[in-house]
Image: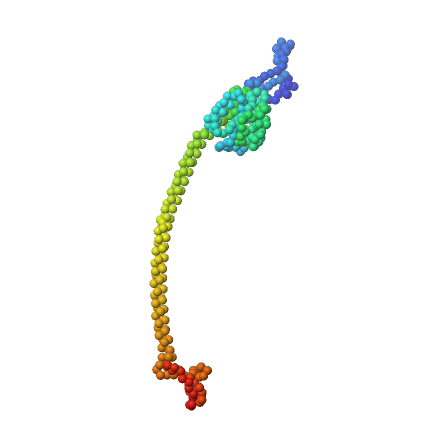
Length: 361
C-alpha cells in the first residue's frame, strides 16, 4: 500500500487484525515477485463491527445518553404498553403471550418495524416516534398514520406509559440495527420509560445502554412491565380483608360506646317517669309549703286584727267616754280648744249629742 492509499484509512492497522483489501495484482519484474498493490483497506468480520460499536458507545457516553441520572423507574400499573418489533418476529409472540398471561386487562399497542437490514434503524425510529405521540396524549396519532409502514397498529388507542423495544437473538450482524446512532438519540427523547430486550442475555447493543432498563430477553422485558394480575388480585383481597377488619373494629368500638351512653341515659320512658315522679314530689312539697305559709299568714292577720280591734274607739266609748268634735269635724282633745258658746258634738257608744260650751277654763 503506497502513501496515498494509506492516508485514506480510517483506522490504524495492527498485527493480527483481520482486514479486507481491494487492489490489483502485479509482477515486480526485476525479481520476478508477484505483488498485491492495495488501494483500500477496511476491517473485516466482527472485529470491524466491534470497533464501530466501541467508537459509537464512547461518543454517546460522552454525550450523557447512558447516565444513570436520566434512567426512569417503570410504572407500577401502566395504562397502556407500547411494543416495537417486527410483525414476523418470534419475540412478538413471546411478548404478547407473557402480557396476555400476566396483565390481560392492560391494552397493548404494537408499532411494527424491521429489526434487521439496512432500513431497520429508520423504521425503528419511526415506530418509536409514533408511540411517543400517544405517550404524550396524542389520541389520534396512530389512526392518522395507520397506513404508513412503521405506524402503530391497534384497535384502540390507549395512553402509553411504557415502551418495549424487543427482538430475538442472532449474530452481531443481525442485531446491528440496534447499534445505530439515530436510534439511540430517538430513544433518549422518549417521554416514557423504554425497556430494551434485544437478543440473548449475553448480547449487548447501544440500545441497551440508552434504554431506561435492559432486559435479558424479550419475554423478560414483558414481565418487567407486567406484574401478574393474580398478584394484584391477591393484594386487593388482602386490602379488602384488612379494611373489613378495621371497619368491624371501629363498629365494635362505637357499639360499646353507644351501649355505655345508653346505660347512662336509660330508656326514655323510664326517664320521663322519673321526672314525673320528681315533679309530683316537688308539687306536693310546694302545696304543703303554700298551705303552711297561708296558715301562718292567717294567724298573723288574726293577731293584727285583734291588736287593731283593741284600738277601736267604740270600745272606749262603751266604757263611758265620749268623742268630742267641733262643728267642722275636728277632734277636741283639750279644753283650751273650746270657748264659751261654741257648739260641739259628743259621740257616745249609742248615739250622738249636740252640746254648747257654757264655760271654758
